[in-house]
Structure formats: C-alpha cells, structure tokens
Image (cartoon, rainbow, N blue to C red):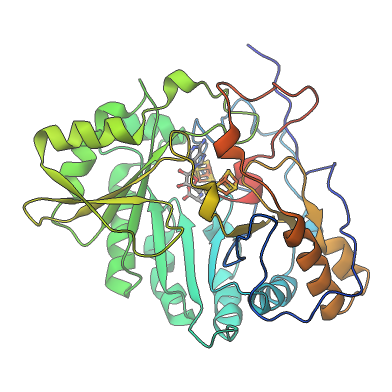
Length: 369
Ligand code: SAM
Ligand code: SF4
Ligand code: SF4
C-alpha cells in the first residue's frame, strides 16, 4: 500500500499579517475574484466516532492517531468571538461541522452563543450543523432549544451491510434514520440527507436511497466523491458523476431540473415530475462551483482556510491568544480574504494528490466538510 502521510494539524500554517489600514467591516468584503464572504464553516472537533472509508479510514485514524489536545481547540468564547468578526464582514450562514460535531461536549452552549449574534444585514443568522446522525436522537431537542435552525445528516446507504462497512464501526442505518426523525420532530428542518457516492462501494444504493426519501420531508443530496485530504487514496475512476446519478434515477422516476434557491448554492436541484419531492446533486468534481464560492472554513484549532482543498491555513488563534484586538483580527481576516483566488475544483486534474511534490491537502475531518 502507498505510504500515508497525514497531517495532524497544519504545520505549514502561517500567522496572517495584520494590515493597519483596511476599512472598517461593512458586510461587503470581497476576494480577488469578487466573491463575497457569506458562509462560515466551523469545525468544532477533529474527532469522530465513525471511520468512513472516504474520510477517516481506520488504517490511518487508528488508536495511535494523535488528535488535537483539548487546549489546542478553540473555546466556545473564542469561536463566538471569531464568528462575530466574520459576521461583520458579511457572513450570514454558519455551519458547525467536524469531525463529528455532536462529540463536542455541551455543543448546545455554543449554539446559543452563536444564536445571539446579529448579522450585518439585520437578517437572522442561518445556523446549521452537519452530522453523521449517531447522536442526533439524543441531542436534537436540546440543539433546537438552543437556537439551531437546521441539520444536514450524512447517510451513504439503505442497505445495512453496505452502510456498516462504509462507516466501518458497525453503525446501523436504522439508528441514523431514528436520528433524522428525531431532528424532524424537534423542528430542525428542512433536513437534508447527504450521500457520498463511491463507485463499486455504494453506487448500487443510489436508487434504494432515492426510493426511500421520495415522499418524505427530507431532501436527499448526492455528493461526488472528492479528493479531499491525503488519506482516502482518491481515484477519478471511483467518482460517480452527478450526471450519471440523475440519469440512473431518471430512468426509473422522471426528473426535471428546478432553479437554485440562491446564488452559490452547491447542489443542483431536481424534482420528481409526479410531485413526490426533490433531490440535489453536488458536482464538486465534474462541475466546479468555485465562481460563486463564498465559503470560509475555521478549523478546530482556529486556522482560516479559504478553500476546502487548501494546503495552508491562516492561524487566527495565534493572533487571538497573542492578545490582538477585534479590529486587528478583523483586518487580518480582510487581508486574507482580499487576496483569496482559490478555485481548486476548476483547475483539478485527475488524481491530483501528490502531483505537486511536498504539497499535501489538509484532511476534511480537520477543517470540516
Ligand atoms: N461527521 C459529520 C458528517 O459526516 O456529516 C460532519 C463532517 S463530514 C467531514 C461532512 C461531510 O463531508 C459529510 O456529508 C461527508 O459525507 C462529506 N465527505 C467526507 N469526505 C468526503 C469525500 N472524500 N468526498 C465527498 N464528501 C465527503
Ligand atoms: Fe466522521 Fe463525517 Fe468523516 Fe464520516 S464523514 S468519518 S462521520 S467526519
Ligand atoms: Fe470553493 Fe475551493 Fe471548493 Fe472551489 S474548490 S468551490 S474555491 S472550496
């Protein structure tokens, strides 16, 4: 097997410069390609209770794997402080992720702290979370009560054996479905269900998943398997394109395209012609959506990533713990975003990992999906 080199944390990150002369945040920060900063994904833990084969394969994330020590994690106060500053620059949507975000103790406290933040436009902050669903039945109501708007739940198969082998910790489909229903009952909707499709692993589950979630309140979204990080051994042959997914479903259940909900929506939407619901397809590999990408990512230990495929983060925690003021942090973020020109998916080539000697992309479980 190929040698695996995994970054525990991003040693090549740098402390961002703090430009002195940038204007005060006015909610309209734009990057070098004129893309606004609207969407912030915050990873609250690098740990997970699943070992999905495409994300945290067991042979890499084993018992000797060194996760971040607690002191390295941003505290809830630090996360909220950063979020307030990002919001002043135009962020209107915050997604909590990980690792498995529900593993972070007392996460509901963070949710209620973020809930209290006003946005620059005066519109309510859209506060969501992506989870593997394993702890959702237990946590849905308390998260709703704390002010969470919605959840997205990952589920890769209806077939129990397939799902158990994909999460690689023997977790059942029924338990995830129970979590989804609990979230729905708690009012954490509309709920999206994300399925990563890997050819030869779960592509035979496309139709069973579509059949199951048709005529339910849940929107199923198919995600092209991506070359994130360095540990999943990605190969283009294992990607099932969104085009193929739509074709396979459409052959059994007629589909028609519908307009996006908003500019920059990652999923292309389709509805069943008989009115029995909609699906989404996220074509991160075959149809890049970098042109409208307004997402920033804050890693578990406070590094700002301007692209999911970035190999280097900007260490905001270092500035915070160095006693810098909010204005200085704000200027540092603006300085990074002004220079942002990332458009990895538009420029990716087949089997990218390792193409550039010495450059390894950061793991998704570390910066969050
Ligand atoms: N643990 C949570 C979960 O699984 O929902 C949140 C974090 S996970 C990294 C976020 C999303 O990224 C999940 O929907 C997961 O399926 C997706 N993901 C992880 N690795 C991926 C890959 N290589 N390609 C495409 N999607 C991936
Ligand atoms: Fe964990 Fe989510 Fe990655 Fe699966 S996709 S290993 S649940 S972080
Ligand atoms: Fe955004 Fe980077 Fe993904 Fe392009 S590759 S859509 S810039 S995160």
